[in-house]
Length: 334
Image 1 (cartoon, rainbow, N blue to C red):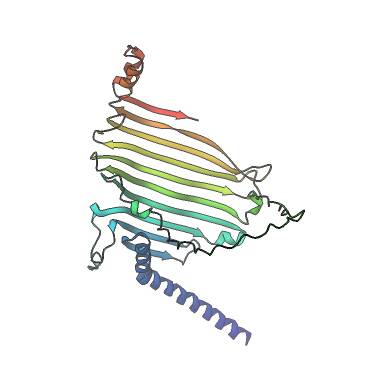
Image 2 (cartoon, rainbow, N blue to C red):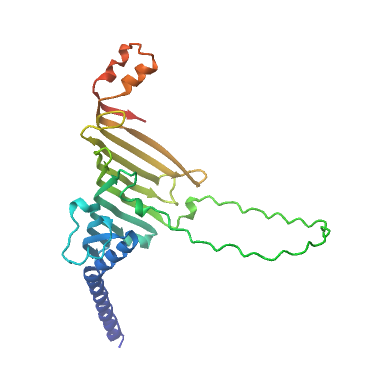
């Protein structure tokens, strides 16, 4: 009898897993994508397209992947979705993300650990446009909500003056003790936190100024928080968060305004952060930062003429370096 019960329990458990897995697969692949598009369109009021939404739950590290997420550069119109095969043209794209990926390991949860392998936005392309009137193509997304019109206060009929009343002694309100704000401590963490990578990889942001017809590009941008290891039970050895930021900043053609004509500069920042003080165990971040520019070139500096005008046109040969292109390699600051 017991063997039959165990047998049926195993069969029912197996069937339940299959049904749940199949239901999740069907929902994600046939319904979730359209629902997500619809909800995003309600928030941003623009056309939104998602090419693929995938969910892998049959793994010790479930993974969610969104591929080819596109947000249009203009407000949503009634006719824009009339054709189901309509694809947002490249010139009309405000945000174009190649992939978004999230992977969380389940087995470490049994040991009191949160291990997030990846939470990445891969190859996002963002086009920021400044119109001649000074507004941007994202201005409608950051406008504050309209304040509700408040009704004018009701007027009450004038009342006859009341006789003064004697103020009772010792009627001052008692001062309430202010609750001390609690500082976050490592002991408040219920889990050992391990993070592989969180952030943005290989991003491209284009700033286009329609008034001056000029553009600036932020290429190969990386903003990563990685190799984070915070263990409240072993804070002396496991109390670290690493940060990497790098990008190339480049002008497109000659700039018509500004302090230089062209520039092409690489920027890099590396940081190792200890979020908690080892002795007090309170949140008190300390960081070792290394920053610099591995290479760069700036052409058409206007700094030379500005300095000469300040110095009453005196010739200073040491400033002659500013007349030509300014180039460098491997400049670091610690």
